[in-house]
Image 1 (cartoon, rainbow, N blue to C red):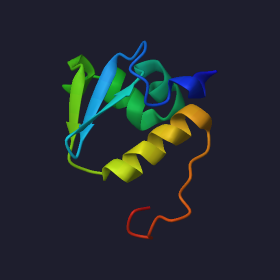
Image 2 (cartoon, helix red, strand yellow; image 1 turned 90 degrees about the horizontal axis):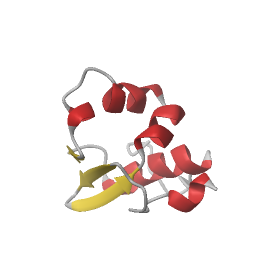
Image 3 (tube, rainbow, N blue to C red; image 1 turned 120 degrees about the horizontal axis):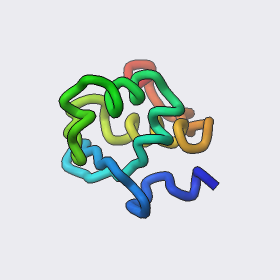
Length: 85
């Protein structure tokens, strides 16, 4: 199941660094879930050639929720503030 690979280094081909933490992911799963990731990871961008991408925004908590949605098609955002959304 795709969700089994959420935050897993196994078979990962990209690493995001958010708030100093390395968060492993899989380009194909992200690209298939969202046009933003498709462009970022497979478009004519600097990031598409990197194995490690440093993000200043969003927060680690929000980014993990975005990844959770990409892998599971739902995310736990009940305790997020309006500003975080």
